[in-house]
Image (cartoon, rainbow, N blue to C red):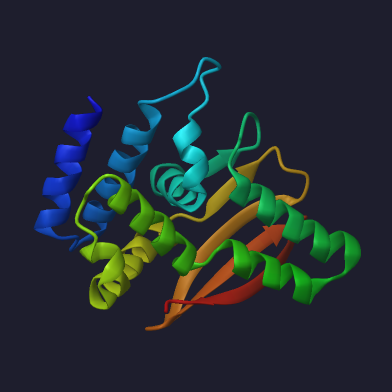
Length: 186
């Protein structure tokens, strides 16, 4: 089963990532591959290496994240940033925390690692033009659906929108208030 998924990924990458559906397919197939191996507790140990891929994959496929049973560190980082902001009044620190958690370079590194570990074509992660196109397409997918958080103490919603060709704005809603910042594409 895992070999079949890698074959599909290899063919998909060879055909190029040229539309939003290609991005979603890539993320979903990577997720399916990683979910094929689990330990005796039912946990997926390989997912630990790819938290931002998992976050983007989940967001591309779902419009909400439920705190119950979530082992994803990125929603936890966003919740911690909301607490810094709302409970301690540290808006600049909270903004920086979000920007550290949500970086395209982090996603690029995880994708590069996954592709290299599985002997897949790395043009997507290594080529500047390919990478920029991928991120723009991914943003098109994610910007269509603000991500709603359920069961978190403060965190309610997170969204992206592209403000300029090389700049993305993020918006975090917590306890009925909005914090925003930017994440450069490069």
